[in-house]
Image 1 (cartoon, rainbow, N blue to C red):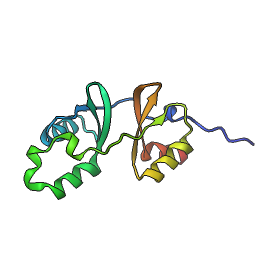
Image 2 (spheres, helix red, strand yellow):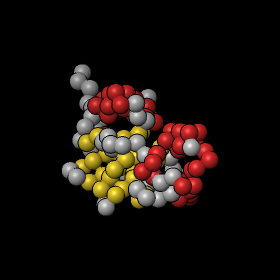
Image 3 (cartoon, rainbow, N blue to C red):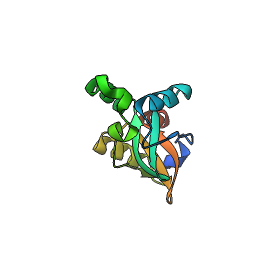
Image 4 (cartoon, rainbow, N blue to C red):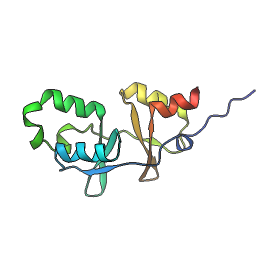
Length: 127
């Protein structure tokens, strides 16, 4: 029997948060908190530049605790932004996460971000 691979788009979350590259650390935290989210895409002039997840937040807090109110999203985002295509199969997304050590990947359709796929999405699909 041939296994049918599902696409990234079929399991991703279509809800994403965006924040300006010059937003300060507290604005990023506030946006995450208000939306009960764990990732934000960082934008500059309408283009995605990086991602901030709970890992980058924790690293920012631990390394620059005394100056975090002055930090901007650019100071602690993960960049360049690594994305996966909406028609890629889930195995490709899983392999990419492992290879670049990410737990979340923004999903692109043509030149537009359309969602976010997480390790949890992949695990839910597999099990």
